[in-house]
Length: 289
Image (cartoon, rainbow, N blue to C red; front, side):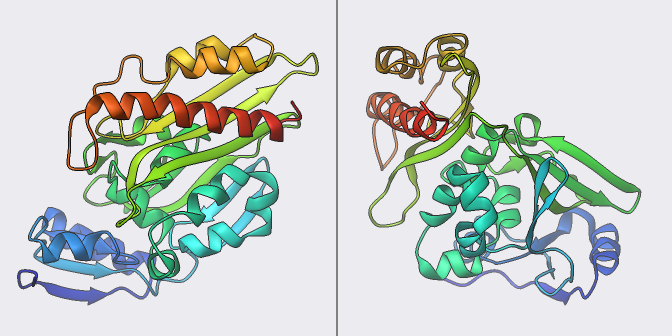
């Protein structure tokens, strides 16, 4: 499998990358870790005329606390997200998602920004980042803008990124005390891609009731699916096993999965319930429940 011919540029700064994007427009694609774009090019599913490699652009990797948010550079590789002490302590659900992506090679070369921008519906990061209410910092020649996860992932392999924009950073609000995050995944045994997964953020009141919850499910459509019925069933309720089971049973309500080579639509709906329950249970334990 060989890609179509293309031109190659290695940007040495963000400014140079933006200049190249402006010059070549929709004929160009950004290359970060390469573990999403290159396979698509080899299969001729993508045939950009130009590649703009941003892998050596300084200042676009690393994990740090900035105020009330965790700031993650777009070029941070999956393995660094998974092993970060800050992430493991404050957002264990994000570390869980990063640790089960692909194989060791993918985790050490693929980047969180590349995964988010590629928006593969079978990818892990879009699901957990939606559950955690992340926001995406997009840089263009005219300035920066911020897009929340609920508006960033639009459709199959489609995001809110414009042709002249670079995703530079992902910001995740740091949960308050009494909050728990978790990620649970049924992965395809060969590829590691999602069959069904669930990401959860649960905030627990001192009384033991659920103050709020965000539940995102992967594998049920063209992108992360917000399980609104499950969220509503949890809010204001005591986080008992019975409440969790009843809320998780609604995880696929309103979704429209399709049969594919991995699983039937009915199987995906059933497993969405199973994995939503597992993620919620884990999140509640971490919240102190």
